[in-house]
Picture 1 (cartoon, rainbow, N blue to C red):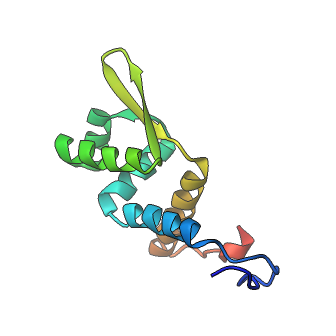
Picture 2: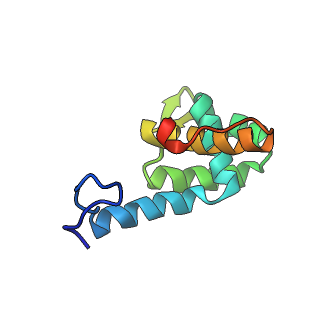
Picture 3: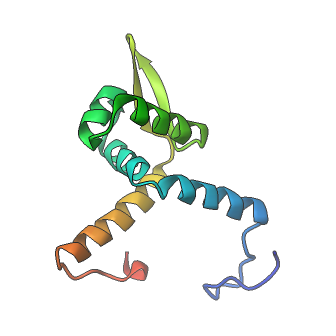
Amino acid sequence: MTGGTGTDGSGSDDPSAEVLAEAAGAFGLLASPARLHIMWALAQGESDVTGLAERVGGALPAVSQHLTKLRLAGLVRARREGRRQVYLVDDADIVTVVRLLVGRLSDRAEGTPVRHLRGV
């Protein structure tokens, strides 16, 4: 569906079906607590799979599989550093979304007043 007024009242067209499908796919990948934790950790800085497994408390093969899925989706990338692969977030906007949502939910859990999304 295209050609309507945006939900924000700006008069902009709705996103294409392809864009919505891509966004849903990214959100679907981030719906896994393990993958979300990996993205959160990588948002703080790059790491190899061993460091990520220790940080998120996951088994090495499972973390490696999650990284493969995130990499195929274009959310993270890897670079070689000697004999190891170092992973980093490949999309700064995803970092913003993850930090915003997880940060807001953490604030709520701690009883800290939370600003509305529009005020961010």
